[in-house]
Length: 113
Length: 113
Image 1 (cartoon, rainbow over the protein chains, first blue to last red):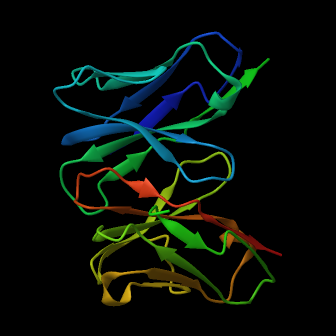
Image 2: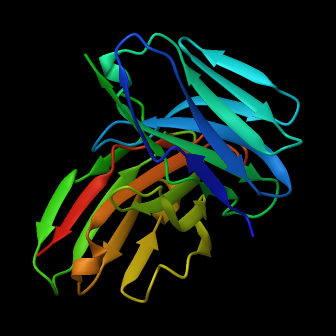
């Protein structure tokens, strides 16, 4: 069964600190993995897209890693800011099927001053 | 603004009423998706269009739900005889090809009293 699991479910960190969010998946055949940021009451916004051959991809203070062998990904946020408070959703795409996107339930990050 | 736009952003209705949501995708995108998202959950797939053709529908899309995309441009999602369980955020997304980046709208939040 194609599934995406994220951990932790929620996280509270102090402003300026780093944090790492985890995503494990069982989607097959794998096409790509995406991380989205979703502010409360808004639509998700893409942070990174990683294909099978990419191990690391950065977008400013966000760095995503992918281990296709263990089917794990992480999103590392450096020097957190209050504006990083949001839900971070991991989405894994399968190679086949129109409905080929599998969503995690997200990690709710709260950055406090 | 050339992003995905959704209207209305918020809708409060009484149980049993019909509601309609509209989505205007990015103009050159031929793929359009509808998702439903409840609090603390990731988006759940509802239906998918490639141009004007509705190619897949989730079992979540009961006979009270109908979606259209006339002429392959904007799309509408109608819910008839709304129930309290329909209360959710309805997200629209579009992409230019099957594995392309997915751009989400801001969502339409439905509250059924």
